[in-house]
Amino acid sequence: MNRDFDTLTLRLFVAVSEEGSIAGAAVRESLVASAVSKRIAALEAQVGTPLLVRGRRGIAPTAAGQALLREARQVLQVMARLHAELSGFASGLTGSVRVVAAPSVLHERLAEDIGLFLRQHPGVRVGLAEMVSPDIVRAVREGTADLGVLWDQTALPGLGSVAYRADHLCVAVPRGHRWARRARLRFDEALDELNVAVAPGGMMDTLLRREAARLGRLPPWRIQVSGMDAAARLVAAGLGASVLPREAVEGHASRDALALVPLVDAWALRHFRVCHRADGSTTAAARLLLGHLEAQAIRPG
Image 1 (cartoon, helix red, strand yellow):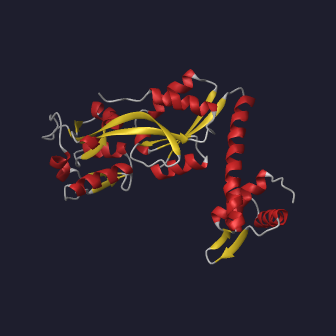
Image 2 (spheres, helix red, strand yellow):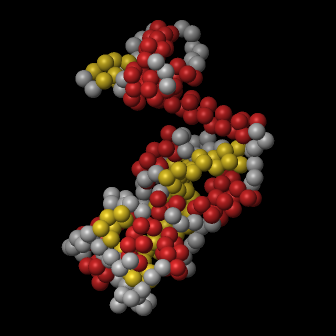
Image 3 (cartoon, one colour):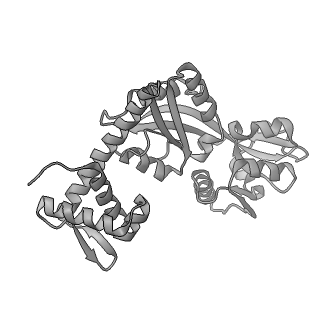
């Protein structure tokens, strides 16, 4: 058996396995379906055993196909990292880093921290994308991202991580509200007026629902928005109160009719971490950015 595999064929095999169909893989890889089918047939002939089987839910890998899929993903990850590293050198750069981050982190200091890093290391490129926490973990584990920045309450099986920044949840109210001059608030006394929810189903939404359930109550949310800026504007307009991270919306408080009253509950101080692969495959540029972000960590007390 010829043991040499080309990366295009491996990529097509992974695409068919993940999409569950030849047609889906063809669309994903911008090829015609017949070309994909011929590649898969040649691959099966090369290894001498069926790799895919058609079932009720589409095409799925056989036992041999599962083994190949696992190894093919690793090979493609290595090739992608190698290409990124070498293309950087070819253009006079010293590397590239792919970062994915939770929405809360992107609304706070991550962009500024990466900007400082890029000024200090002009030979490095950084790509930054927003994802929810489960997708961040998956992207870093599968190698489609080098670093992930997310809340430390997220499980990180098989990944390494370092401490990053922290934020402080506050009750945001209009400046004329009776709480506007309060030095602090407890969640239980504020809960009944928290009618503006941010990113339903997200990490902060889940946290607030959990803490409300512990009190035997439900948040009285009447308005739901996807982002913190929108929530801050609604609160400033007098449409309700919301729990928001101070670090994400303090700019609104300084220019709009918005007051931020810190929550005293222990869980209102949230910590973030930067996760990375623990198998030693993190690139030199990614390790450099990882160390930079760790250095920005805010440790309370």
